[in-house]
Image (cartoon, rainbow, N blue to C red):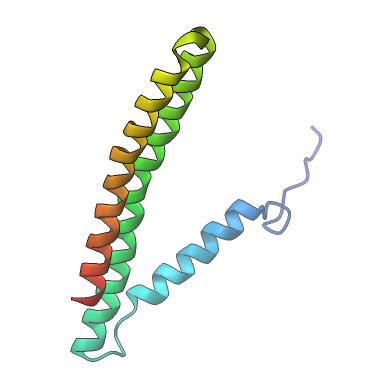
Length: 114
């Protein structure tokens, strides 16, 4: 039986794992409110919660706009004569979908400063 070399943690260190490790350290620092008084702990928790809420609010519109534009391009490629109507409908859809992200941003500001 041939011995296979065991990969060390340094060899498996990819940029993605580095980013995840860094993000985990930041979350741990934000979650550690033991040295703060009541108002500071509330402010720290509000900032973390507001950022998390806006992150979640931005995911849906991002996916929706990407899907919408992809389908519009596909429709324009299949029927170039209807490109004007498809493009108008696409921009209306983008505007309505982006409104969801703006609502999420408003909620973020409200959670952060109120």
